[in-house]
Amino acid sequence: DGGITQSPKYLFRKEGQNVTLSCEQNLNHDAMYWYRQDPGQGLRLIYYSQIVNDFQKGDIAEGYSVSREKKESFPLTVTSAQKNPTAFYLCASSSGLNQPQHFGDGTRLSIL
Amino acid sequence: DQQVKQNSPSLSVQEGRISILNCDYTNSMFDYFLWYKKYPAEGPTFLISISSIKDKNEDGRFTVFLNKSAKHLSLHIVPSQPGDSAVYFCAASRSQKLVFGQGTRLTINP
Image 1: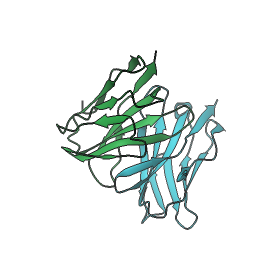
Image 2: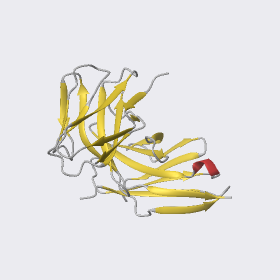
Image 3: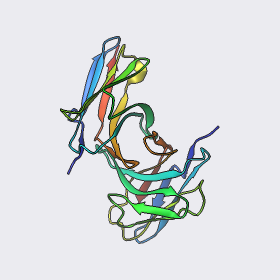
């Protein structure tokens, strides 16, 4: 089945550590996105990539980094510079302009 | 600056009746609008969309209305079913970037 896979579903991090969230898609979509959701709030855009080897900062990119070496993969690293990393992280992809984004099931990151 | 707003955090509707979810936006450059449904601990699921050149789009029980002059978007679900209970997000798009509202929790009562 085609879709977006995020792993792991739950992730725990000690303060001061970097952690990488995985996102893989087999939909052959060019564009991929990372969002963060906090309780009672909408999704906020962290980073996006419209094509391989290119990515752009979203609205809340500070403390995060990404790479897009393959079309299928768009990993997100939450660095120790992110002061409030506890959140629900969602990855999405889309086939192009004015096409709906399709989401994975998310990774919940918690700080120990 | 909240460019997309859903002013009702929650809505309760009786099964079989119409559910109307509302969304307002401020940026007139948005050219594509979407509604997503979300269950807890899952990713949002795409429901329906509308281009800014249209004022209505219908798909089965779901209809989205766009009033550009009022910068207002609404989703109608009729008839409402228990499985419709979820959080609904509206989103507005410009240049492939989506801006989401805060969500409205819809509860369908038997």
